[in-house]
Each structure stands twice: as structure tokens, then as C-alpha cells.
Amino acid sequence: MAFERSSAMKTVLIVDDEYLIADILSFALEEEGFLPVTAASALRALDILERERPDLIITDFMMPGMTGVEFAEKVKSTPGFERTPMMLMSGAQAHLGIARPDLFTAVFLKPFDTPAVVRQIRLALDSKRP
Image (cartoon, rainbow, N blue to C red; front, side, top):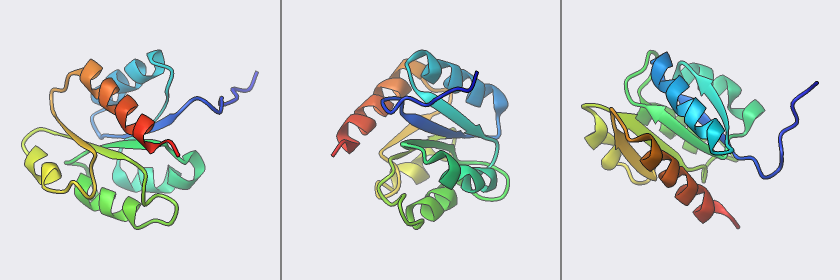
């Protein structure tokens, strides 16, 4: 049986090369009624961006290929994604995301509080509604 995406189900793209973090967040979002999609690198995420058309993107800072800030800049310069909410998760580089409110609606320090992340996702998606 093929899975059909409900129009009410919001897609969240999680970009993190640490599989455990991506899995934990993915499971939590699924439990909350979101459709999580994961990518282990920013380059892979860019490849799946058009296909998945995420409603929100969460990215790590330190990844192979490009940083989370570089990834966010690429996403925001892609037609159709200029207004897609993005959040950054990072350890030591969180200050770089905080300095870029033009890119990120929220920045989380690792280790992050999963319920707090889910709350921020809901807030960002609620404020995105037309």
C-alpha cells in the first residue's frame, strides 16, 4: 500500500550527518504528526529539496561539504524557498546562527530539548500560514 501524504501533514527536512540525532528528531516529529525527511549532508539535502518541498528545514552547522550557514544561504536563494523557515542546531557554533536571523527562525544548542524543538517548529509553521 502506498503512503499518501495528507495535505495537513507538514514536511520537515532534517539535515544532520549524525544519524542518531537525525533519528531521534525524526521519531519525535513523526509522533507529533509531521512527515520527517532526513539528509546526511547539505549537498544531499539540496538534491532532495525540490522533490520533498519541505515546509520547514532543520540543519546542523558542522557537516561535510558545506556549513549550515552556507546551506541556508543556498536554500534562501533558491526560487520558491526564500520564505521557508529554517532552524539551526549546533554545539559550539550556535552564535553564528544567532547572528543570522535573516536565515534562521531559531537556533538550538546541542544537546537540544526535543519538546522545545517541536514547540518552535509548530510556532514557525503556524506563523507561516497565509
